[in-house]
Image 1: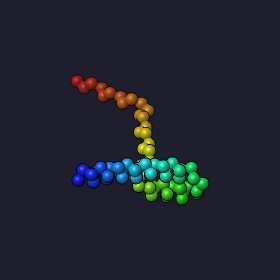
Image 2: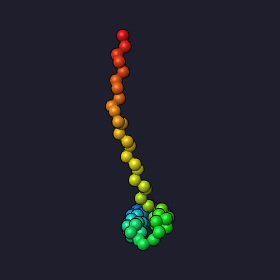
Image 3: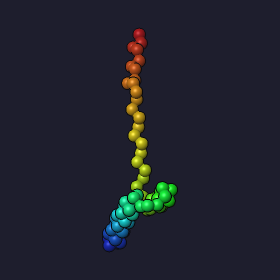
Image 4: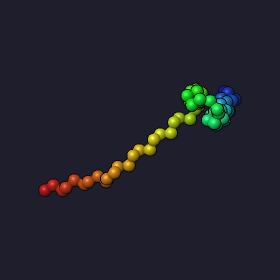
Length: 68
């Protein structure tokens, strides 16, 4: 059982490494943009798109006036 877990972990790391190498190679490959996008998206363990940073508020919130 332990051996199976070790082999599974090694295969997972190997697959992730191969996917990263393929992603690196395909990113600069001379394919049309759409074809390159489809190939990169079909990779297992493909990197998710980078999330957009949250926009900062333009003005700090105005504190409410004290009530009496």
